[in-house]
Amino acid sequence: MSVNGYEFSFKDMRGNEGFGDDFDELNEVLNENRVAYVGQNDINTFFGHYYDLTGTGVFNPLADQDLLEVGTEVVITDEDGLSKGYEITQTIEFLHENQQKQFYGDDYMPDLAYYGNGDDMVYIQYCRWDIQTGLLITNIGYRIW
Image (cartoon, rainbow, N blue to C red; front, side):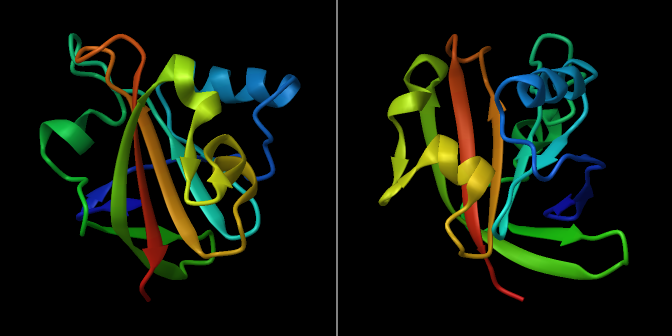
């Protein structure tokens, strides 16, 4: 995955549903400070950590270098070398404790992240607990090429 020209490697976990054993596998990847790629039905969801105090979080460059904002291009290249381009159209911030109450239009965000809605989308989420305990930053975009 490339965000504004910055490359991020990821572990392909598409099909992961975020609960039970899947949740444990997802957390293992995140605890290894890697990017997890999940999603079904044309949603391309990437989860990663941001660690402000250590500067070592896999998604630190997103905020520290101002790489990700509305209008940013995200490119996802598959194992065959085929690429798709997406444009970030919205950034949504909410607290971890409230994530079960979040909607994007008519879509329940926890379901959107894992199951999609049929639109070809990108969904990038990381925490910024250095700003506020439990703060999650979610960037959503649509395919442009």
